[in-house]
Structure formats: structure tokens, C-alpha cells
Amino acid sequence: MIIPKGTLIPIGGAEDKGTDLEQGVIKRDRLNFFELGILKSVLNEIGKDNPNIILITTASQIPDEVSENYLDAFAKLDCTNVTHLRIRSREEVDKAEHLEALKTCDGIMVSGGNQMRLTTIYGGSDFLNIMRERYMNEEKFVIAGTSAGAMAMSSTMIAEGSASKAHKKGEVKQTVGWGLIRNVIIDSHFIQRGRFTRLAQAVGTNPGSIGLGLGEDTGVIIKQAQDLEIIGSGSVTLIDGFNIKHNNIADISQGKTISLENLTVHIMERGNKYLLKERVFSAEVNELV
Image (cartoon, rainbow, N blue to C red; front, side, top):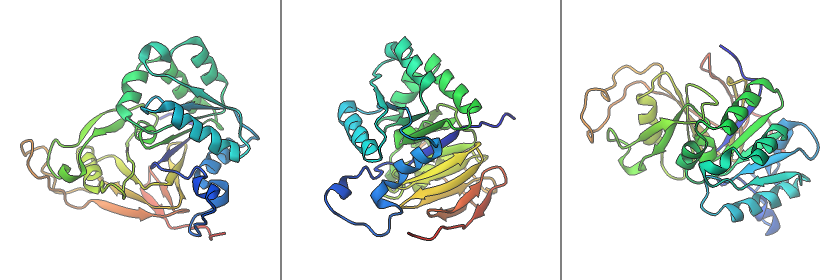
């Protein structure tokens, strides 16, 4: 098995972009609030001053507004070398200027929106192949994504599914994601939108996978597709299906209620760590500053 050298940072959505700071609001429970904690972590993982970042807003229906928010947020962190790739269709993905920007950047930030736009527009493209190659071979290459941008990172991706109906077989639609990390399924806005059962059904249909339910303003730094560390102000719910015993999903008809026994669940906060291969949790928490 080839181990990737790069770093993934999936984020649960609604990460702090400095709007509260501008309004003079102080939230004492956030680490490095005055440094826009999660976006600062993205820059720290790249490890250089004013890195070259490309911003992908393909998933969003309001790409220009989203781009402006990220440009402003990164500028507050003295990162002004950010290029917005305004890719809206498959015809635009593999333009020479887009491929050149990808080949020369230090990191990628993928916005939220509709994750199906990311898979249907980028799937099979030279752009996605180059992204994967750089992630596999370059130690300081960072791919960060929020909400839809996080969910698209995995091989198995939740395409859609109502939280209120997720206890019924077939209500959670899954498809193939970007394939940057295997045996992990990522869900976003997890606590705020009540998505536990949605992710549980996804894991129940793929018991060898780990489900990562990311709260808002919360993310995970994933190194070598193995070592996880929680960042941000909220929590991550990790659902492990490896030890499932009873599982009726294969035997019931569409629309019937699913039944799963022996899911392993961890609730994780900033600083907690997890090893994917060993399935080992560590409650190593840094002190608040």
C-alpha cells in the first residue's frame, strides 16, 4: 500500500473567517480565535510565509461571494497569494491555466456547496489526477475542504440524504468521491443538522470504513492517510463499523428501518487524536491559550 505524503484537512463547514473579530465579539472557547484557528492551521501545515493557494468554489452557487470571503479571511492572516479558480463546468476544468495553477500552488482550499458538483465536474479529469499525484508525492502539499469540499475527499461519498429519514434503508445516497482517502466517509455540519443516523447508515453499508462527522468550525488534520488530529472549536463524531454484529441492511426492502448492533462511537474535541489503521483513540488535548 502506497502511503500519501501530503496532508488532508476536511472541515465541517462554517469555519471562522474573522467576521466575529470584525464585530468585536470574543469567544473564549475558541483556540487562537484572533488568528482564525482553522484557516491558520491550513497555513501552518503548508509551512511557509504567504503560500500560493488556489481556491476552488465549484460546489457553490455563489462562487464570487464565497471567493471574496476567503480572500478577506486569508488576507487577515497575511496570506495574499490566493488565486480563485472559477471553474463551473467540465469544459473548464482542464484549461491550461487551471492545470498550471494546480501544478505550482502550495495548497488547495475547496469551498462548500453541493458535493455532487465536485464529483461530476472533476471526476476523470487531468486536474483531479494531478491533485492526487501531488498529494501522494509531496510532503508539504495540503488539500483543505469545507462542507462539500470535505465530503468529496473520500472514496465513498454521501451524495444526499435527509437527516429525518436516514433511519430508513435507501434514504442515504452514496457515490464515488475524489478518492484521496480510502475507508473513510465524511459528513459535515454534523451536530447542527442532526446527521448521526445518516452517517451511521453510510457506515453500516460500508462496515470497514470509519465515519467522520464534522461539526461546524471544526476540522481534522489527516497526515499520511492515517494520523488524525482534531482542530477547531467544536467536536467530531467518529463512527467505527468494524465490530458491527447484527446488520439488517442487506435483508430489508427499501424504506424499511435499519438495525445495527455494536457500532463504536467516539466523541472527539480539539487536540484528540486517532489512528485509522489501528483504530486507536488518544485523548491528548492541548491546554487552552
